[in-house]
Amino acid sequence: MQAILQQIHIEAQALFGRGHVASYIPALAQVPPRQFGIAVALIDGSTHAVGDAHTPFSLQSITKLFTFVLALKLVGDDLWLRVGREPSGAAFNSMVQLETEKGIPRNPFINAGALVITDILTSRYAHLDIALLGALRRLTDDPDLDWNARIAKSERDTAHRNMALAYFMKSYGNFVNPPELVLDNYCRQCAIEMNCAQLAQATMFLANSGLDIGTTERPGEQFLTPEAARRVNALLLTCGAYDAAGDFAYRIGLPVKTGVGGGIVAIVPGKGTVSVWSPELDAKGNSVLGAFALERLVQLTGWHHD
Ligand code: GLU
Image (cartoon, rainbow, N blue to C red):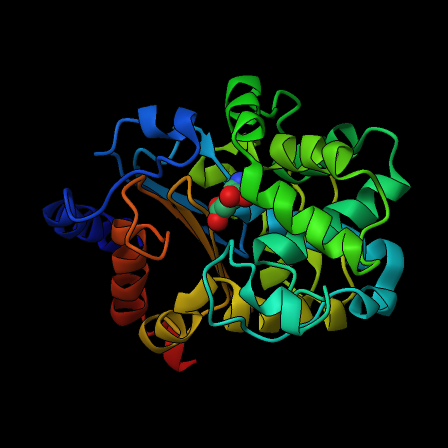
C-alpha cells in the first residue's frame, strides 16, 4: 500500500496548476495551493500515509457527512420529512430547485440540505460546536481537534447566499431556528480542521458496518447500526460530490464526500477509508489532485471491482 501511495503522489504532482483554490471564502484563498496528502486506514487498524497527510486542512462540506450522521442518530427517519435523498445535479449552493420543490432540499449534502440538518441539530444542542467536536475528538482520539475561528469568521462575514437559502426555506416553513443562529453554527462546523490521517480514522465506522474500531487505549464503539451505515454510504455514492456525483461514481465508484477546502474522503466498505487533500479545485468545487488520486487508487488496488 505504501508503494502504491508513493506512486500516486508522484503522478499527482503533474496536475498542480490545473485548478484554483476556493476564493469565495476569503480565508481559504490564502491556503498555499501546491499541497497534496493521502492516507489510507484499513480495518486491521493500520494507516498508510504520504505527502502532506499530517497537515490540517479545512473540512468544509466534509463536515456535512458528520452532521448528517448525528442528525440521523437523533431523529431517525423523521429527517426525511425535511430533506430529500436524490442527487441534485445542480451546484452545491444552488437555489433554483428550492422554489419548485417548495423549500425541501434535494439531499443533506448540498448547502440547503446541510443547513436544514444544522437547523435540526441546533434545536437539539445548546452548543452544537461542542457536541460535534466531542464526537469528532472521540473518533480521531485527538482532544485538541478544533474549528478555526479565522476561517469561520471569514465564511460567516460573506455567507450571503447561505443566509438567503436559510431564509428561503424558512418562508416555506422548513427552518425552525433563526437563520443567523444556524449560520453561526454552520460556519463553525465547516471550519473544523483535520488532517488526512485523522479524517480516514474518523470515518472508519462507515467502512466497518457502523463500528468504529477504536484504539489500543479505547475500545471500539457501535457508532451507527450496520443498516444506517449502508444507507449513509448509498447517499455518499449518489450525492457526495455535488453535481459531479455521476462522474465520481463512474471514475471512482466509491461513496465519497468532498469539500471546498480540497479534501475528499472515500469509503471502501469492508476494507477501509481513504482521505486525500489538495487545495486546487475544479470548476465544480472538487479537488483536482484528490479525484485523480482516488481514481488511480481504485485502478491500482482493484477495490472498485470487489
Ligand atoms: N462552507 C462551504 C459553503 O457553505 C462549504 C462548501 C463546500 O465545501 O462545498 O459554501
